Image 1 (tube, one colour):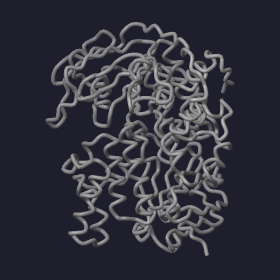
Image 2: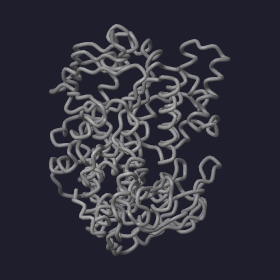
Image 3: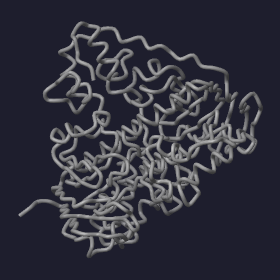
Length: 541
């Protein structure tokens, strides 16, 4: 008699018109009350596996389905998603895909109403979820007015309100600031540990979760290998691992630490020397400036008396909590959001309040939702459009290959995975050779290897004289690749400088290595260099 609440037997699935199977004879069991983590490269089949757990695959997507999936005693092929939703809560990678009402509290109550939950129970659960996810202050807001991270927390609250036996989440922290991500994951751990909720979570960023899960399922080209975290870690690409685990591998630790707490015990046995001197880049001329800008949307002040200069040759990471105005800052530079007061100067010209078309392709913008930047029927046509718009010569296939999208030129952009769509939007915009790049969460949904490749490409573009500005919640990424970090808070810039000045002395906006070592150490490379400088002779990565 098995205690598995999820049983996947010989699952084989192919999307309509697809050449290769998305899932290839998968065998997987997840015990009741387990916290399971699903990992794998972008496009490996993670989201397809998750959608098979609530019947969206194959009921919604069609295709060829073989084998069986049983969750909480219900076989998915015999029960439609509406029935499965009473047992399985689901949070999509893109929260906009499941938000349907005009108020946050109505959104949380929506599924409860559809299943006939009594008004008293419904009210209690709505209040409970508002508190658990820390969104009580948003109850009367329309989801359309929220930031991406705020919408993501509303989507989690809506799924939890049904009190499902299994909660399935597809990258639920991808749009959350560090504190918001920690709050959501802490809430999931609490529900798992105290109420016995079975959690299945797909994530690319493993630093907050790897040390707290019972099972890791690695998806690779549709095949699945599952086991304990320590069993699966050796099979993972080192770039995907938390920095503390990378450090442990480099120091040949046994056991390898999976959490900062375990890492502290490791580093106490090593002496720390001076961190390496990082040579700062020399920025070029100003490409864009904000001078005393004030922005308000629907009567809410978002930015106040904000001044900022963006220069050629810089990679600038814009960070801050959800709702702090990061996306609004980019849209103000572009011209989508006219300021109430202040000036927007681009390439020496006052373009305050002017339509984005005046930039004539000099600014490339990838929004938080990449679908908004993709509007052709074939991916290759997106690249051709950008090349034609700017009058630039370029090889379409070469551009696709640079972003790991070779062979996908004839695919419809909406048929790509979340990470592939992010890369597709980047490829389409960058092919136009803009001088200023404004990127809103450009690495969301990407695996670590692709993220490294994209950021290396962006660094190369900065070295060619472009200004690269990216909104991100990924502190590790900002520490490794950014020349400068702009931290927003309370409608203003509260810090602006090199990562070693901004991303230190913090409980949230800092890296695992800084939590371990303090000072100016931010990356694994910094930590190994500091240990080597002490004469401890640490091996390299």
